[in-house]
Length: 221
Image 1 (cartoon, rainbow, N blue to C red):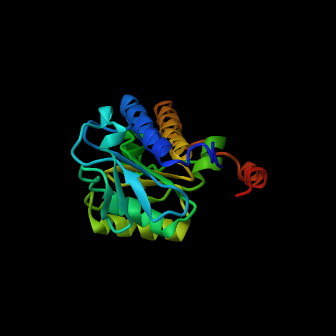
Image 2 (tube, one colour):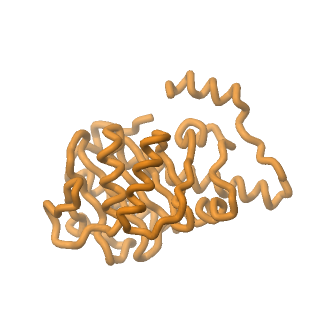
């Protein structure tokens, strides 16, 4: 599903959107002062804007962003790109349908996955937007190996949401609004799952398969 497709595809607008998304994520507790990163690109381009490394994430400005190519070469900006740039680049290399990548540290989603409970299809939004959520084994953040693991996963599954074990989550979207929605839905589903567990539910009430098939027919996926 695509949101505001044309309106967000201008480089200056993309930069402003990255700042807006980072501010929102920080305010909602999905990223920390120094953790989490966001990137976005124009459709079809082999370069993208990404948040900087080692800078307070709650008060970024457009001039703080860095433009790099898919090999990590800095094309614009004066700061160091996020150490997670290889992971973002790996997504863009493999998925021409993806123009925005958000790496957040959703605490409930990540914590449940560490407890062996990955995101479940318990809401219609989860079925439509998340569809499937692979869990990537822990690899040290910022490494080429993590980028390889993520690349392998999205190549095999065409996922738009991933959980990075002991680390956080990835939301992939046609644009930043879609990627942001995926991050929010992941945490919404996690809170609902946690509430069910606290209430004593031993088996989560998943959306029935017939309704999942209906959603696929309605939304064309």
